[in-house]
Image (cartoon, rainbow, N blue to C red):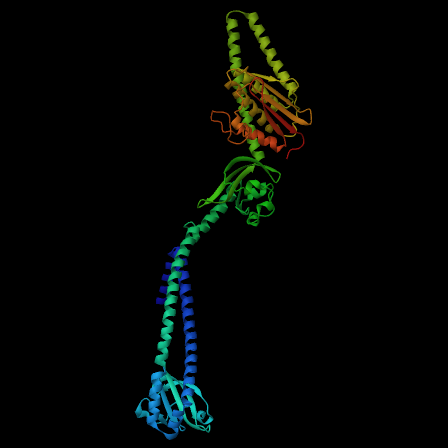
Length: 542
């Protein structure tokens, strides 16, 4: 019962312990066990080595002593006094623990303890002396537990006349072993202490890499990320600095027509799946907003945000939507805004016109009022007929009709150059894209002309699709473009205006022109202002 409670307590303690402490304790236990096992192994190896070497030394010493002439003479004559002198001298000169000399019957002729002389030696190997055999034995003898080397003594006629027993006490061997093991153990303890510090540093590093979160929190964040990716209507794609896909949602996979599932695409190189790939592997770290791209033949509007970890660039997260969806919303919004602008302009003109007619009627100038009505009606109808005959596409005709009245309201004169023509079917771009180009160019021309007090207030407009190219030209009599921004005027965020404009209009114009492999030139108008000329070849759009 107590063991179960202890196990339950340890389990709860580990469960409530932070991941850093669990890693640290795991490494600590592993290192301790490894070093403990290493210490035991080295002790065993040292003990075996020491026993082998002591046995070898003891046997060599015993054989040397057995071959000494003085020892042989003393044994032959049973001269215990001479043998004692020899043994005492050898004990002082050597490091063995004791020496025992016996006759051919193993009866002691010399022993460190005089009381043991005359008694038979202990732990003799049966028959070994008769066979002239030398051997090592470790046992409890008269001097205590020791390792003994026993070898026979031979006379000059090669007859066995005695035996030498040279021993090293185990206490002495243990002291030598301790002297060797103590430094080794100290080194292992030092290594263990260093490993403990490194384990703590490693666990802290792992915790930092995990941004201080526990594994359960990381798993929850991963599930939330997967759910977020699936719930977002836009396409989401993340790549690292090597161009490898690290995350992608299902909408991105569908929009870009990539084969396989998002899980299968994760980890693959983006250059193998997407073309062109420059936008996804650029290393400048510059965020981008609302870029118009053509990826895998699909028009998209993309936003790009850099991933930074500890001030180091790690890759990109790109979100995007199909351009068609944006175009539909933009076209609807543009048309609504255009309708509102046209109605406001016409309402303003008609109010002035009706006020004038009302004044004439009150003055009973009926003929002049009727004449004015006929004149105004004729002018409006003439304008409508003229625009309708030149521009067959109703969206573009409506746009230019509104811009004409807007120019009049601003005190400007928008002139359609002779030869303007545009068919009902626009080639190669869509009518919404063309409306975006014309609307931005005319708005810029209006504003530039108003800024120049010396202008003749004339804006000339020309468009033709009769040749192999769609040709557009808009000239104003404004203040011109400053030289320092002329080369960058089509770059996103660059603008010559000072009214809070964000520099998007001409960027969109250039994007559409590049999309259809067209060209645009900027020239100075005479006597002042700017001329924008656009040439878009037919049938070459992406």
